Image (cartoon, rainbow, N blue to C red):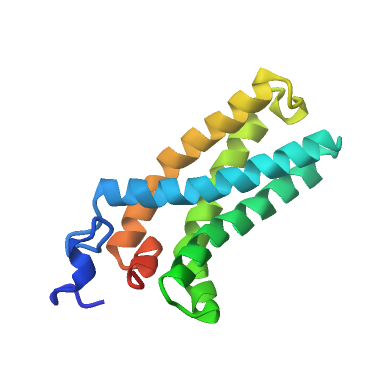
Length: 163
């Protein structure tokens, strides 16, 4: 991307700046990613826990659904902006893969390392506090990753090229 040329999206808060992305831009991109991840992760954890699945299959389901919902949020937004479905899939993969992967790695590490959280049930405060605490830590860790990527025209910067 040529940063020396004025683009209409340059006035947009998510624009790539010659000196890197702002923290606000990175936080918004991370929050967008976190929303999709949280929906999928919570759904997967609730389903696996309610069905009394073991820890490994529950985590696999939760992580899979986090990626599905994370990609879907971007995919539908890009398609609404007029991008073909095939191109939209490429944009979603480019925009969200690293962000979702970092978020899921951190979130699941927090849950796995919280004593008793893996065996907690839906009615336990520990279940929800570990899950939500994992999201908070993941947001803090993933925001600088997104800032770095957006500042280099990668990650969520790819989405904003289509707005």
